[in-house]
Image (tube, rainbow, N blue to C red; front, side, top):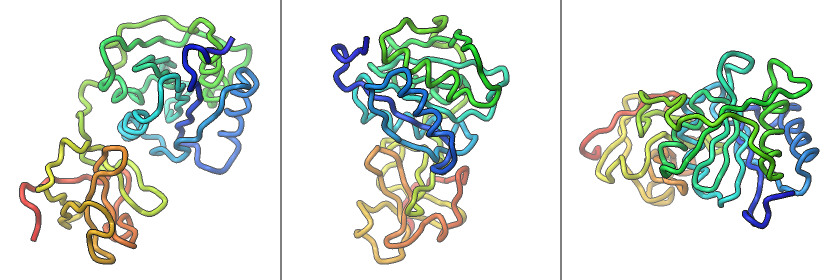
Length: 257
């Protein structure tokens, strides 16, 4: 029985590094629909930082905040698939996160209240490939949760599998969007408006939005999900400044004149 009475906004949210083309997302959706056909599926990211759970962790936490209670995130950024890393289920703020236990949910857990829980998935399907746990394990487990079934796992301490050495704010580029804007792992509170960002020997001042600066000028702003982002008015900041996922960012005390 679906959990619609408990969570009227029940939905699956896909967050992967699979890319927009190819068969992988379609195969995961097919498995979700097979087991929980009444639950809608939202494509959030299919181009999360490729094989980079750390960068993806900051992106996921920021973008998950806007989703309602009852959302079930099926997350696959999993370079260690088939290895020793466990599969996990996270319950935090009325939302569920299913995916690899490789740090992908670290920032979600840091932002969660003390009632958050974590389970190690202990469910062997009849057939499972060594390289596609998104289809064979994570999607079925997410569908089980949507259907109100018992969680197929062993509850662990909330401190299990944590990444204590990761900073709360990551001064790096974590995502390049369609427009060439570069999202960072820094939250709004971490960077004062008077601060300039220094990236690849270029200083960038804060602006409210694109039209606040002249055409072609690069700047930083706080995006709609609360992360510091680098952009250029009617330009592609990633190309203009040679930015990639992992590019380091320095903070300067005074805006550059």
